[in-house]
Structure formats: C-alpha cells, structure tokens
Image (cartoon, rainbow, N blue to C red):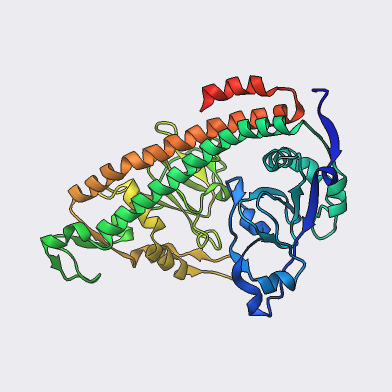
Length: 414
C-alpha cells in the first residue's frame, strides 16, 4: 500500500444526504422538471451515470418533502431494499428515502467513490440492520472507513476503470441501435408493407396485404414449443428467468447444469418468450444463439419456445416476439389466479400473420443477420472487458496494482 494513501471515513470525504417522497395525494408534487430516482430505477441500470427515473417531481414536491436536490456528480447509493445499487447523477436529481447519496467534498473524485462503493457492496450490506428489510443507516455509512489515494491518483484509477466501462457502454448503446434498426425493418416490411405496396394489395382477414401473400396463424407459421430431446442428467446450458433481457436480444448470464427432466428445452435459432406474469409484461424475451454446435439447452418451465419453421426464420420470429401488438395479444390471453397468470398456448392459434413468399422472408433474414451478429460480437467483447475491469477493480482500489501497470494492460484491451 502506498504511504500517501489515507484512511478516512465516508463522512470525511462527502456529505451524506437522504431522500424523500412527496405526498402522492397532491398531484402538483409530481410531473415537474426534477428527475426523481428510486431504487427501482437502478435495478438493471447498466451505466455509471443516471439522468432520469420513471417519474419527475416539481419544485413544490421538493419543498414539501425531505427530498433534496443533489448536484451533478453526486454518488447515489441505495441503502435499503436493496443495499448497494450505485450510480452517478449525470444531472441535478432528487431521490426517494431508499438512498443515502454522497456529495463529494473538494479533493475527492465522484468516479473514484463510485468504483469504491461498487467494489464494497457486500461490505456495505454487512452493516445493514432491520427486521422488515436491511437498511444501512446514514450515521453508520458516515462512519465506515476506506483508504483514499491523492486526488490525482483517484482520477487516474477512475480513468482506467472508466475507459473499460465507456467501451462497454458504447457497445451496449450500439446494440440498442441495431435492435431498433431490426425492429424498424420488421415494422416496415411485415406490418406497414412499405416496400411492397406498388405490387398491389389484396383483401384478407387481416385487412389489405400485398398481392400473393398468405395469412397464417402463429401456430401454423411457427413451431410453438417444438420437441427437443435432452436426456435426464445431461450436462447442458441452463437459462433461468432472471437471465432473460427485457429490451434486447441476447442472454448474457449462461451457466451449465444437469438436466432435471423438467423444464423447457431449446436449440440454437429458437426464441424464448416468458409466459408468466409479470415477466411477459416486463418484456422478457431472448434469441437463442449461444449453444455449442448441436447442443440442446434447457431452462425455466415458464418459457414458451418459438422455433423456426421454414420459410419463417429466427430473426422474423424474434422481431415478432418483440412486436407490441403480438405481446398485447399474448398478455390478454393469460389465464390463472392473480399473480400466477400464464399465457394459454392456444392463443397462438388465433393470432394471424401476413406471410410473404419465401424469398422475401429469406431476404429479411439475410439483411438483419449482420446486425444480430454484431450484437453478439459486442456482447462477447463486453464480457471480456467486464472481466478485466472486475479483476483490476479491487487491486487498484487497494493499491496492489499501481496505475502505470494497469495502464499497460488497458492498452491491450481497448
């Protein structure tokens, strides 16, 4: 450990500020211009900075509650339900009472504090107390002690870790753009029929569709829960519900587990669609493109598997599964008791698709294929960069690795 590092309490390096919730009985407290952040806004948040939450509050709401306006650069830390979500305020924000936010004093870097808290999530949780849910009290947080290097080294450490995170964030934003492009092309071709209208239109039970196209139900055009063989006890790729993304194509958390004999089974090219509430409503859907050659994977019993049935291909099915009208149909077809409702598979017999000639479907698959391949390559690079970051993080924050040595590794990674 370098001799110029100092052990200081959180209260020494930052003002610790709580949050609050304006009364919901007064509508004028909300829908203002002040971003209001709750722990839910940080659940699944994948970027260092946060600019907005689901809701804004007004100046009146700020005055009439214990919420405080936090300056840009404040480090937001959830201290209950759960403890340990961290983000940096990219603009002035307020939070609810689920936070104790750190407003750094002169001589201390927001980015360094962010990484310090990220590296010590479990340590923070150890100091939470309470019977209903664990809460890290503000006075307790202020008393916790960490070692801090001089400001220049704080910034250098944060720069190394931030460079890795910047590349990860760039890849993720690129993937969002590619996802949007694929969905826009699907909408243009198979919903609005924009490239095909000059070929003439014909009446159908769906309304007007391009001349020569047919209409088929999802159950006819797509393999719903196709048979996939996997022997009990086989070591296989496993995907649980928590691993399904809500707004992107790819599963990132993949493990192997012996097949229990119960659960959905899928092959490369299938699409996984959550069939239970609230996972379906939340958008949990994924493209299967992660299995070793010829392997069958398995996962939650709460997946509906949608498989390709030529000429209908994988990317058409994925885009359909993300399409709002299709999702609404599935949601409206859910049955069961409150909180445990599931999609009735029979609903796919009553959702109709305009199906073009095989050549058009093949052209669509070929056109979007490079976009999905780029998404996959970006995600693989993100995994590699995150692994390097997670290896460097504790070593840099403890002084075990110095900045100049980490810089050499950084140069080969990005």
